[in-house]
Structures are given as C-alpha cells and as structure tokens.
Length: 141
Image (cartoon, rainbow, N blue to C red; front, side, top):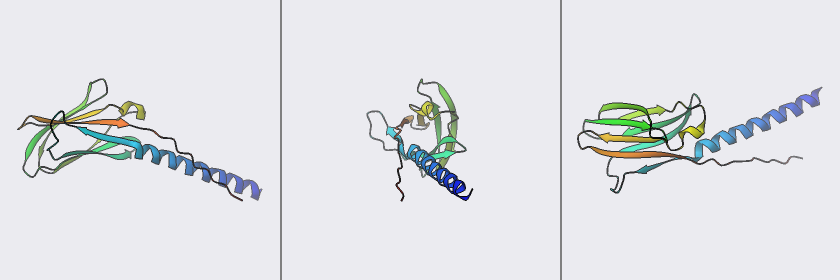
C-alpha cells in the first residue's frame, strides 16, 4: 500500500510540474508589438502583457503623460469589431484590460488603439501570440 502511494504521489508531482511549465511557457511567449504607422512612436503610451488574472489574458496600458490629457481607448478583435472603448482623462494613467475569451486563440490579432483627443494622434498596439511546447523530462535512479 505504501509503495502505491509513493508512485501516485510522484506521478501527481510530475504532472503538476509539467502543467506549471506549460502555463509559464504560454504566458512568456505572448508578445505585444507596438506599431505607430509610418511615424516614430514619440508618445509615452505603453502596453504590456501582465499574465492571466482569473484565467483571463490581461494587459496593462500605461499613459505616462505629465500633463492632464484626454484619451480614447478602443479595443478591437482580429475582424476589426469593437470589443470595448472608453475615454480616459488625467495624467499618469494606468489601466488593466482583461480580454474575456474562452481560448487564447481568440486574442491573436487584437488591437488596442490609443488616441490623444487634443492632438488626434493614435498609437496602435497589436497582440501577437506565439505558442511553444515545453517538455520537461527527468530521469531518476
């Protein structure tokens, strides 16, 4: 009975390690690229993938403006359908957006458009997903 318990405990430990490595690989391989048309990106807007919160892919938008300004944020899916939009006003704005998708495949191609309403300049951030498989193999004696 004791040996069956040890075998089961080892198997569960190995499966949990593989699951953690798999989810860590997914989280680390999602990349966010910034495109600002033909102009150089001179704004202080920044979008980062912060991981999954409550099983939802989450992104943090940072607007590092030193003076109060008004922005329009529009989130669109790969088919250019508007998922969410809001106006933000203030300085040093930070927001976290959770994409309500049941599968990670749905976030590929999602864009975040941030428009400064005073200057009418838009920064577009496109989400690109890369998935890599990681296999953890251990040999024990």
